[in-house]
Length: 110
Image 1 (cartoon, one colour):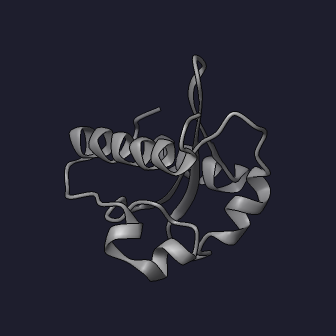
Image 2 (cartoon, one colour; image 1 turned 180 degrees about the horizontal axis):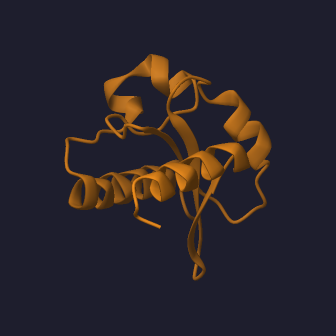
Image 3 (cartoon, helix red, strand yellow; image 1 turned 45 degrees about the horizontal axis):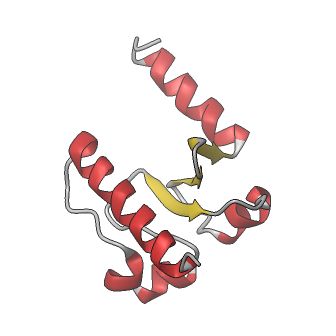
């Protein structure tokens, strides 16, 4: 039987490593670095301008509840969800996604 806590921890560490490869910085798991952020549903530190929640589960998720539980401030809340043999997806509120698209267009990226 797979230990779900260990599976979640490994996924958080993998996302932290990927984040540091692409964005730089020193990303850590909040369960290690910040109990306050961990209690608010944020799994990784130093991922500005995003708050990141990682989920490595096979069952369906209530993404709306997860996003609503996360801090509602200037960062964008995202949930990275992984299923076995299906890869990972990222979910966020549509208004945040549209704001990012508008910023990319204003800066000539799109």
